[in-house]
Image 1: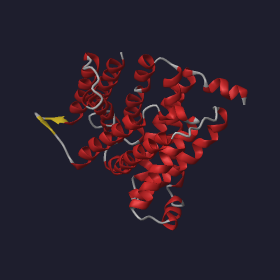
Image 2 (image 1 turned 45 degrees about the vertical axis):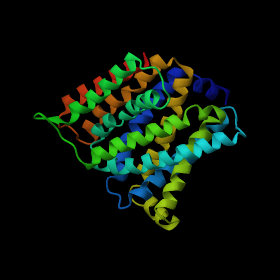
Image 3 (image 1 turned 60 degrees about the vertical axis):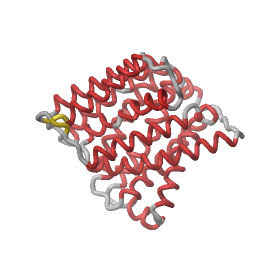
Image 4 (image 1 turned 135 degrees about the vertical axis):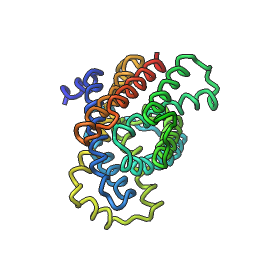
Length: 289
C-alpha cells in the first residue's frame, strides 16, 4: 500500500495517467452512446460506474470530511449544473465527431475567465484574454467554411454544456480539499446521476436492461476511465506547478483528435482539426502563464 501511495504522490505519474484515461474516456464514450435508445439512462450508467469504481482509490488518500453545511450546500448546487452538463454532453457526444467535441469542450475555460471578470470582479489580465481568444479561434477554425461559420443544434448544445460546466466549477472551486478526494469525485458523479434519474423518471429495471446490453463493456470502460481521469487530473494539478501541468493536461485534446482519426475514422479536415487543437492548447498555456 505504501508503494501505491508513493506513486500517487508523483505528479509525473498522475499527469501521464490523466492523459491516458482522458483518451480512453472520450473515445469509448462515443462507442457507448452511439447506438443507445435512451441517452438519460446511458448517462446515469456511466456516472454510476465512475462514482462507484473511483472509491477503490479512497484508502490510499487521507480520510478527510467536513461538517460545514455550506460546503455540502455548494456541492449540491454545483451538482445541479454538473447534471445539466452531463445530460447535454451525452446528446452532443452522440451526434458530433469525437475530435470536434474535444475541441469544443475547451470553451468551458473561456466561460470561467468570463465568470472571473464579470462575477468575481477579477482584474482583467491580458494573458487570460489572449488565451481565451486563442481557444475561441481554435473553435472558429473548426467550423469556418467558405467565408461562413457553420452552426447547428449540437454545436449550440455543446456551448451550453460548457457554460454549465464552467458554472459548476466556479461554485465547486476548492470543495475537494474538504473531502477524501475519491469520495469527493464519487459525490460529483453520483449526485448529478440521481438528479437525472429523478428528472427523467427513470427506472432501475430499464437501467439494468441497458447496462446488460451489448454496450456493457463500453459503459464499464467509459465509467472507470471517467472517474480516474478526474482523479489523476486533480492530483497532477495539486502536486505540480499549474503553469506547467495545465498545458500538458490539455495535450489530451490533440491526442483525442489523432486517436479519433484512427478509431472512429474521423479523417475529414484532419489537418484543420490538428491545427485547431494546437491553437487551443497554446491558448490554455497562455491563460495559465
